[in-house]
Image (cartoon, rainbow over all chains, first blue to last red):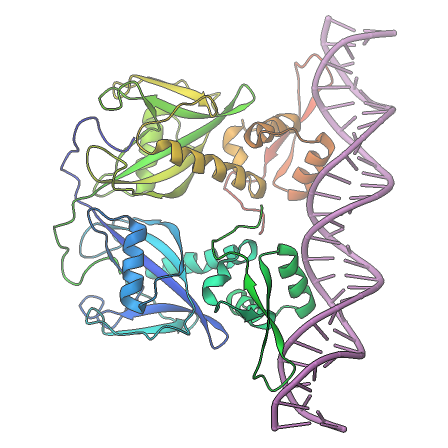
Amino acid sequence: MSSPKNGHPSSQDIKVAVDAAIFTVRDGELRVLVVQMKKAPFARRWALPGGLIGDRETSESAVRRVLKAETGVADVYVEQLGTFDNPERDPFGRVVSVAYVALMSSADVALKTSSKYADVRWAALDGLKALAYDHSGILKTAAARVRERLGYSNVAWSLLPKTFTLAGLQEVYEAILGEKMDKRNFRKKIMAARLVVSAGKVLVGGAHRPAELFKFKTRNVGLTSR
Amino acid sequence: MSSPKNGHPSSQDIKVAVDAAIFTVRDGELRVLVVQMKKAPFARRWALPGGLIGDRETSESAVRRVLKAETGVADVYVEQLGTFDNPERDPFGRVVSVAYVALMSSADVALKTSSKYADVRWAALDGLKALAYDHSGILKTAAARVRERLGYSNVAWSLLPKTFTLAGLQEVYEAILGEKMDKRNFRKKIMAARLVVSAGKVLVGGAHRPAELFKFKTRNVGLTSR
DNA sequence: ACAAAAGTGTTGTTACTACACCCATGG
DNA sequence: CCATGGGTGTAGTAACAACACTTTTGT
């Protein structure tokens, strides 16, 4: 059960936080938003953004608050990843963290370094040194979750503008999965999944044959069966 | 991040609990362990077992502690399901609950009604009225997770004795998935998954042709690719 | 000999992989 | 007319679903 019978023993002294692994695709690769810590013992170390949740706030709204604060973007895909609660994970005291995964288009985001952090950036996953707290572990789990979701859903909508070409969509898939795909097979699979429909327009301005533009049927996250 | 820079604001007043959806297969159907509450406002209502986590304890060890207390069984499959944190979920105060799924063989369990609860039982999933707190929602998510896991892993090990017949294994699958399967296809699939190997013995005492006994190659949970 | 559960193969369908050429446009 | 990326089909293979009879034992 969630609580003892009558009132709660006030003995427990645990804080509840959220951490967010916010992904985007940039320069053809999957990147994650990391922030640079100011204070010891993590000064100059990179970490995932996060913060304590409010007394009357869900963890999901706390994540959206953090997201908004770090990126200014609101309409993104957010999914709970899991709760990390090693008692030693935070040197300042007992904090359990509910971790989330988010996906967003980096196009419309101008990262603004808040006073809270020394720096903010979109970092490639490899070449990222040990993060503060247990964030390296969270990040690893988060990246696996994104790859897993991609196949069976339309989560890619939050990484793309409203209309996009199939080649653009394929680039996103390739960036996230880290492998090249066959163009014909990719298009067949996407069409078979029926998540996407023609926008009835073509992309102009390319120096070559114009590409047909598509849009997602829905921006709600739909898991395709299974 | 998990914490503000220096020490944590003592303002936050949230408790952290665990809840466990403990499943077994009994009489050919999937059942869940529920406990009956004693005190208002949930007196006589059923709920999932759970409790607050200790200051120096992980949520997983808290769940194993609860499991041991309610069933006496220790060696079971346990998996984190997710964290439920609606601020209104607990009328006694703000409690976020880390929910877990567990699977166990009900054969070797004698449920003992602890003084903590009015009653304890293995309940079929349908015909279960609204549970206390938000436990109906947790249970629904938990059942979906078990069905999802079953296909891609050997989690069934914790539902079966050390050696078992393929017919017995199939009954477990049918109970969990709620559908009949074809015997030949089932056996092919199980053999192809290579999670199971002959124990070199046969089941005696049946009034008919003896069945070959099998065992899992490993009791660690192995996800079969994908 | 019969009742009861154990065990076993084949066929069709569907999903995925590999692979190469013509098309439409801008310059 | 050429350079560039857009767009298309087919054949082989692997995974899954449907389906019925023979075998082994106890009584």
